Image 1 (cartoon, rainbow, N blue to C red):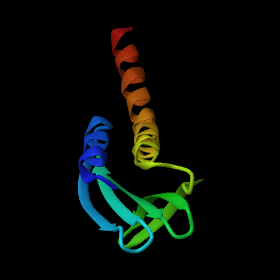
Image 2: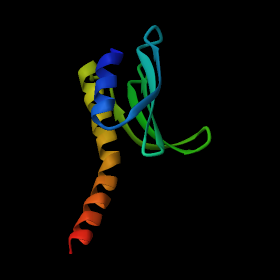
Image 3: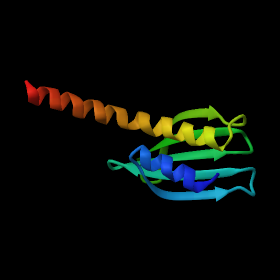
Image 4: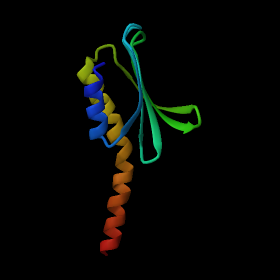
Length: 107
C-alpha cells in the first residue's frame, strides 16, 4: 500500500496517523491506527483472507469492529477510498452536532 496516498486521504478526512504497519511480504497485509477528536480507529487489510476491517478503540488495547469489507477485488486506490469513506462517516455525527448547535445559537 503506498503510504503517501493513504496518508493524504487520512489528512483530508481530518485524522492524524498514529501508526502504519506495512507487511507487503505477507500477502499484502497492512494496518493503520488513526486518531481524531480523542477517538482512535484501526484499519486492517488482511490480504491473505481478502478482508478490510474497521475498528474503534473501546478501551486500552481493545477494539470494537465497526465494519468489514471484502477487499480481494480492490486495488490500492479502492482501499484508500474505502478508508476515506469509513473515516468521513465517523466525523459526520460530530459535524451534525456542531451544525445543530449553530442553529440553536442563531435562534
